[in-house]
Image (cartoon, rainbow, N blue to C red; front, side, top):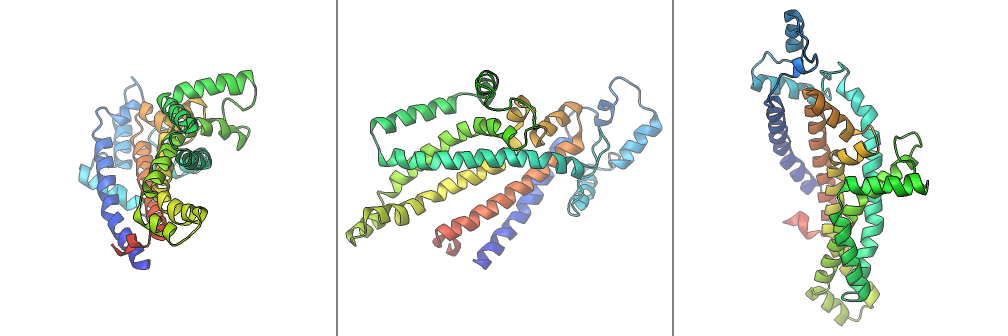
Length: 308
């Protein structure tokens, strides 16, 4: 298991540097002047522009900018915002916990609802419940998140007064409604995946062998069937968590939650390259770490994987 872990870490290192180089180059090549964008139509004095260029290394060749930037990143320094002059690490410390709460709650709702629903759909295959559930999950997938968010605010927030409709002043309770909105579509995908993989696993030879050995149907289902069917579902849950860290832009905007998605939206409008690059590179690191954890869970669920 340790050798498998080391091998996976070594594979992630080139992925990290290639991905961060692409992000850095693409953000730097976006048309427009990020310094002028902070001053609008006003003329920037030459001395002030020179000070900005020196501070953010804009006067250096692109390849040198990347190596200087990565030197800081490897010491956990993501630089300063061009627009606010604040350290990006401080902005992260404010925004990341809010996005983590939102994404964590959404994935928790996804797992709690989707896995039992998928199992039940598989056990009741081709029944009225199975067909009705497939239709409902298709409807859940079809509704755009911002429409669902607005409907949830109107009915669950304003008319029925069950949840706060905006902001984070009510602590964890403020995140329940937006997390349910995010979980709606990803729950539908996971439930359908759980149903399909469980039905596929039940056609495998080793389950017939387990039944032939006289094991109870409950033991065959939980120990042999469910454990193997969980492998792709665990992958989807982890990938969703990584994607939600950066993909909550619409929901955070609708519910006015100042998390990572909210910050990156403002950075794009303000042409704040350093925040866009810093948040994107952080998300790359988060995604790689989450995938490493998933690989370890994979190897635990199916030991054959770590010997391949």
